[in-house]
Amino acid sequence: MGDIAGKVVILTGAGGNLGRAVALAFAGQTARLALVDLKREALERTRAALPAETEILLVAADLINASEVADLAERVRHHYGHIDVLVNVAGGFAMGPPLHETEDRDWDQMLNLNARTLFNTCRAVIPHLLDRGGGRIVNISARAAREGRARMGPYCASKAAVITLTETLAAEHKLNQINVNCILPGTLDTPENRAAMPEADFSRWVPPAALADVILFLASDAARAVTGAAIPVYGQS
Image (tube, rainbow, N blue to C red; front, side, top):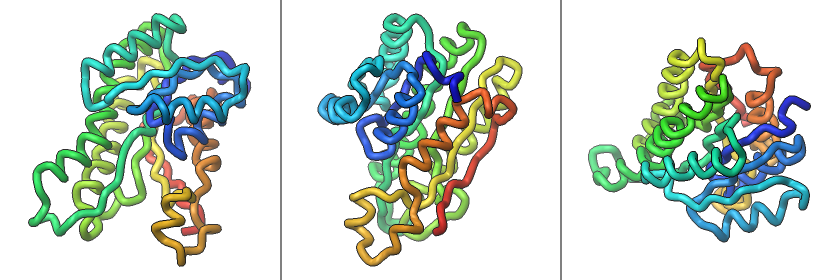
């Protein structure tokens, strides 16, 4: 995927397990990175894991705040001159009570973390991709987006919204050379998931590096004919 070399990639959620794996994958292809997360210390940990020669801009921002997101897009464009790729890894998960007992704050939290963050970043970055003459957007939905599950209503709804927004953006920009796709991961093999489900067969889960490979593909010219897709990456689970 030599075409990734030199591309300017905004990666949200860069301080988490998946974000770090995605950053490593793009750094391995000598992309220029703008790593975004809420906490600066999480970004510093990701930077420390990357090759010393990687071009990196760290941006601590609250992606639920539209003005902060607009500022980060402008900062990346000013720093690198343009933007080529947006990868929306930022999001969250929480179990809850049955839907009829769900509080407004719990509903809002899931919709904000998983849908509003994506809405804000795409709204801020797409004008820059249009100026560039095209680009790639990769979003992270979830297996749970395809089927409502007990005590997970707000999460399932928010991840279903990711699919719908991906399809909408793909339809709106299919003539603008902006490809927009999303991935539906199964259970990721992370330390947190292992601690929460110690009896599970971890070998059946999806390694973050494997998911990062799919993201890298979707950002590359090899996926130039793919847009509007929701791609399952379930491992063996």
